[in-house]
Image (tube, rainbow, N blue to C red; front, side):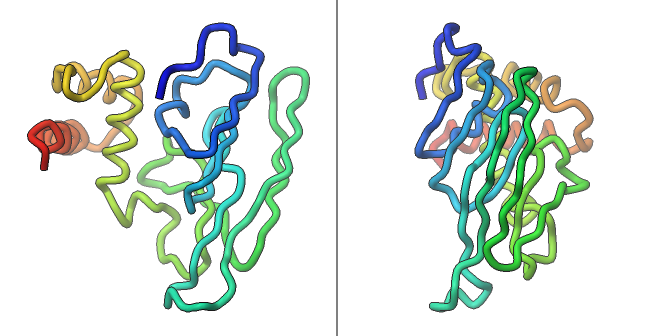
Length: 174
């Protein structure tokens, strides 16, 4: 995705698809998106509506939510979470930096990234590459790891080695 220009500081960006790299780097008033099936907000970014299939993936009703957002003149948000079915709001204790997530009641964890760690490292890498203004093919892996570690603050001891492995595998086309 091409970065939004500097003139967007007072703007609201709306995209069809969720670009996680903008969670940490969009300077505008708000970023709203949809398309993916994960409810989440962080900083000034909100995936605006989402749906989940029940655990059996059958033809039962979908679970999900939508939001009503008021943005005050000072830029603060008042978010009214409107539940469709049994969805709960949570912050993963292991990955608090990822913001608030909305997950189905039947999930045992409050985090999509605890189910699929590759999703987590993919998002971290995309954010770091975007922040560095590069793409994986042209990036120095150590520079990306260092930037990501400094951006995400307190990370587990294995964070850097796992991210390094993730990046190296992607660079080799795995």
